[in-house]
Amino acid sequence: MEKVRIRRELLEYLLELARGFYPNEFAGFLRERDGIFEEVLIAPNPHFGRNSAFFDTWLLPHDESVKGTVHSHPGPNPRPSGADLHFFSKFGGVHLIIAYPFTEDSVRAYRSDGKAVKIEVVE
Ligand SMILES: [Zn+2]
Image (cartoon, rainbow, N blue to C red):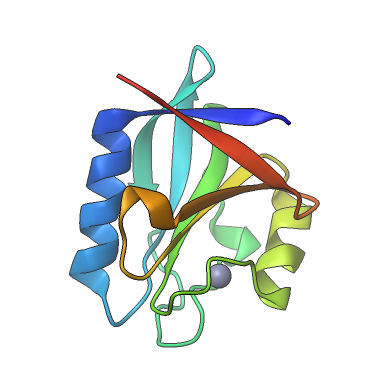
């Protein structure tokens, strides 16, 4: 199984963001350095709401270090929605979904085709 590597500090920050935005979703772009996700750029104008943090492709930053996205789900289901899968397929890369209750165990990663990817936390 493929895997995605993420810095522990970033993962903990993402969990905090998800808790802070609850009951709404948050969405952001993930920057990678040397194969490890290290930084998040909060999406500047996502459609935050109860049901969907829908990324508009017009908002994609022109930044080659951006290799993925992250968003939270205010419910316990970490599976991508239809809109999520549509977005993933356009963007490529790796996509994290953080489901309620926003702990390390409630984070899932998916490829752009919707297949789950293992997450390796790097200290
Ligand atoms: Zn979603």
